[in-house]
Image (cartoon, rainbow, N blue to C red; front, side, top):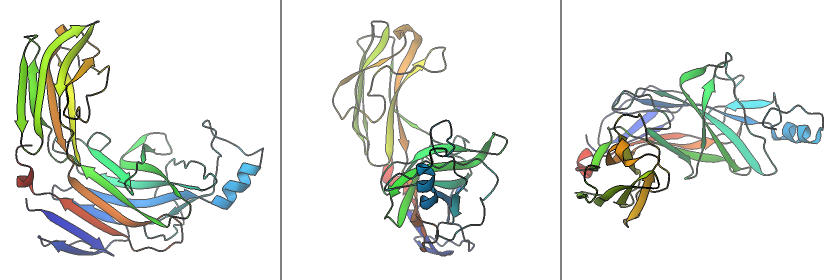
Length: 310
């Protein structure tokens, strides 16, 4: 697939490298080549003046987390237009504002699935706002059941910040196995030179103090890639790690990595690489009800040949 960057401005589509069309919409929506769509439904905040008044009220009702229970939540669209009501009946909760923090919830709808037919979730997407982290929570209906296809992202912003950029990265392809080593021979070693990534070495599968050990040398992954070291069980569903080094590589230096299992329960150690370079950006998202912005949507789908071998 060619390297494609698609930008949507006010319902129009401007495309470099590929002709595309989109229906005009009041909600920013991104569409990927595999049929996945990402739609920024709305933003939820609190009324800072009423929050402050409630904070001064010693009799104000609080929820189990100690947050002020507030009915004065405000919904608005990505361009700042205030909405008369929530997009649909559901349970939403926004953290208290604080002295200078603007805490918000971004409601996002995902359609489609990854290459393994799994819905988009915390395991096959990454997300951030202005380069920083966002919390994630499922969306519950009034009956308490999780509503599929919807996720809510929680972020804290400076109260004087007017808009933000929200980025999603998607693992569009199945994980690639970069290296694997059987536990049959304690002195065994395997080294794989992965193009665009570097040399990966697994050595000396063994046991100490009841834990399965492996010496791993794994480079730090390139931007928007993830590398994971896993212990494949002989019979159990999952073997958890007991120390670091299983995610993000070892910085290219040897590191002893341990797992909570006997070595006899481990079939092999495997290094998997996951590609998160497909990216969607929602830029110019209003952080205040009534503050008008002109949101844009940019989709980046990388050239497959660019990362051949990964």
